[in-house]
Image 1 (spheres, rainbow, N blue to C red):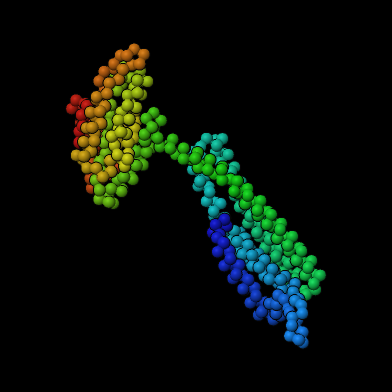
Image 2: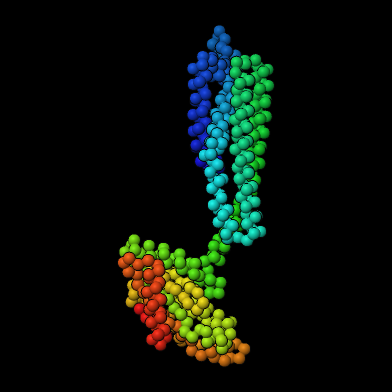
Length: 362
C-alpha cells in the first residue's frame, strides 16, 4: 500500500465503516446513545406551536468524536502496517535504484541523489509517525471522555482534541509540501538517469549504438524473432585497409571515415533495425524481419554509397583515395543463439575480405 495513493473514495469508505463499527460497539455496550442521535429538540406549546429550538451540544460533540475516531482508527491501521513491514518495503526497495544510480552517475552526483532519496524516505517516515501519534492521542481522549457527561469536562477534552487535530494537520501539511517540492529534483534525476543510460549505450564517435547495445539487442531480437517465427539477419561491416588510412593520414582522418560510414548506415536502415559500432572500424547491423537475400541487398546499398564518397583533406585539398568496406551477412537458423549467428556472419565477412574486399558475402 502507498500512503500517498489512497483515493478520497477509499478514505471515505474506510471512515464510514469505522464510524459504523464505533456506533455499534457503543450500542452493544449498553451506553445510552440516544443523546447523540438528537441534534436538537423543538418544544411545542399547548397551542401546538413551536416556541423555541434547543440544540444539543453533546450530539454535535458525539458526531465529531465518531468521525475523528474513525479517521484516527484508519491512521492507526496505516501506522501498524508501516511498523509491521507492509509499507517499509517501499522504502527498502529503493536500494536497488540507489545501486543502479551508483553505476551510472559520478561520485558527486551519486551522493546528491542518495541524499534526496533519503530525505524523501525521512518525510514518509515522519508522515507515518505523525499519523501514529495522532491515533495514540485519540485513544487517550477516548479513555478520558468515556463515562463523562459533565459539560465542562467534555468541553475541555474537546479543546484538547481540536488542538491535537490542528497540530497533526499542520505537521502533515508541512511534510506533504516538502514532499511536493521534491518534484523538480525528481525530474532532474530522471533526466540525468536517461542521459546516463543513453551515454552507456551510445558510441561517442558515431552516435549510434555501441558494443553493449549490440549484445543486448541481438539477444532480444533473436528471442523475439524465434517466438514470432520471423526471419532475422545480421550484417557485419569492416572498412578495408583502415590501418593504412590511419598510418598515412592520421587518426583524425580515420575517425572521419568511420563517422561517414556510420551516417551512410543510419540513412539506409529502417527505424526497426539496430545499427551499432562493434569496435574500431567494424560495424554490426541487426535486421529483424529480414531474410538473407533482403539483408544482402541492404548491405550492397551501403557498400555502393560508401564507395562513391570522395574524401579530401581540408588543409591541403588532397584526396585520400577510394575508401571501401566489406560485408558479411548471416540469417538466423533454427537452434541458433547470438554466438553462433555472429560467428557465421564473421566467417562471411572473412570470406569477403579474402575474395578481394569491397564486396558482400552471404
